[in-house]
Image (cartoon, rainbow, N blue to C red; front, side, top):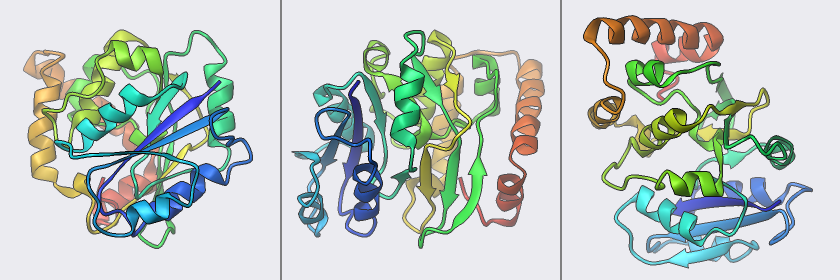
Length: 259
């Protein structure tokens, strides 16, 4: 089984070495046999490509219209059985690849979600976000944001291609949109072990909450709901997530976690 991991990059020298180290330091990472890592660079002018050249990653270069366009380019070039993407400031966890081999060894697994460790800029753990079980499209729509940890979500490549990949009209909520379409098409498998480390720092796109909310509202329209049912499902799902993730919930309230 070959796992394709795509990393979009643009002037990513600050953290991309940690991203690459996390992928290639795994004993299970054998280039072209178990792992294919594709860096899609939009025209970096810093040391990003110099750093990437030290690793056995493939590199695609050229201008793009944004992060999701870059990821779609990586998806089109991917030759693996399994697809996921990890941003240039995030990391995969030790044992991630082995977990993926086991889960996708089941032919019934079209996609999967797993917990995500949230870290600060220097790499210290802040909280863990665990996705809720039994999430329905209606609940996901009513919640109004993507509670499925993006760097801990992987797809069978043919499945995500059938879904059409990412909608590039989104700048921030493309994950929420794709995961909504995936949830409507198939129930995801769930793993208990975290597969990624998501880094919070001053340049995170996800911190643009107003723009994110506007795009998320468009995604929610994919699953129309009466206002009263939407409100009920919103609070029901929100409470489930907070109870399942107490440290994350406290971090949200204190401003320590902005996700």
